[in-house]
Image (cartoon, rainbow, N blue to C red; front, side, top):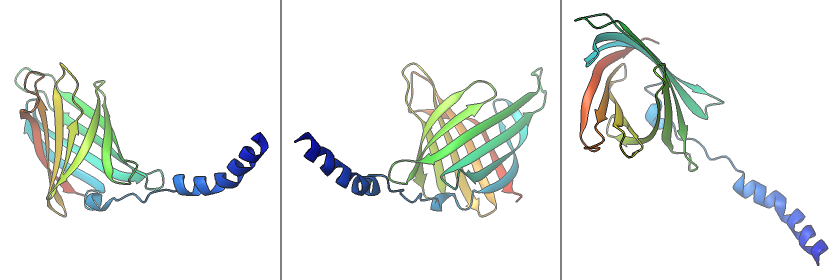
Length: 173
């Protein structure tokens, strides 16, 4: 009896691997205009800053990597700030690009879910009790211009986001 079950499993295994192991095609359509290198400037709580970022496919186009660098010069008694970040944007099991994880040189790690609204891509952090919430938005103004807004919410009012920094970037490559 055990040998029959074993033989049946061996015969079924290649078929199961084909059904469950099949790659789902990633749907990158919303990202086509954002892939590239960007430069811009913005204003916010840290002051006025200049920055750049890139969004590039990686791992055989299974993920996107976003790398950013922003400089806020010293002003009003505040020290200069240099901010670097890295984000991995990836699909869920259906192939829809719906998740991202963010890291920066200040030690922050943020897990995001992604929504697509008109000409915008909106990243919203997962809710963690007693922690602020974060929302990052890219609004494509045209094929060469994007408005970027980073907003935060307080732990007491997790659905009320206030802009921390906002800026316009132009595609350079």
